[in-house]
Image 1 (cartoon, rainbow, N blue to C red):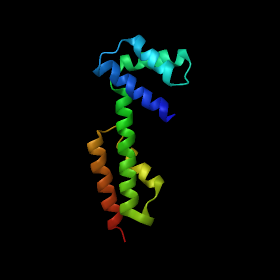
Image 2 (cartoon, rainbow, N blue to C red):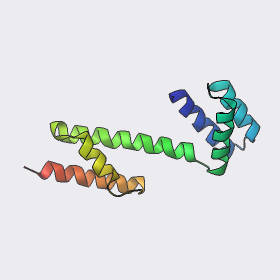
Image 3 (cartoon, rainbow, N blue to C red):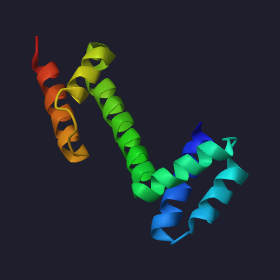
Length: 114
């Protein structure tokens, strides 16, 4: 799955930053993933329609992992993955900088409890 995600990043940025044509993106996915041609075409067409989608997902994933590690480190045994998920999801869809501020606020709140 990580190889597929990496290929998504290459194809997404290749098309939108480097001007790859659709067929080049399809060929790249065929050569580097085990996906069926039908799935590859659907993926490539989705990236054409929504520029930076794969890149955005990866940046979001990395930020979530960073914030979880921060919370685990700061809270130690007080860290509860379920409560962390509630804190992350509480405000719905928000920019990552706002999410980070909210998670830091939540960490401070948890740390201040007796």
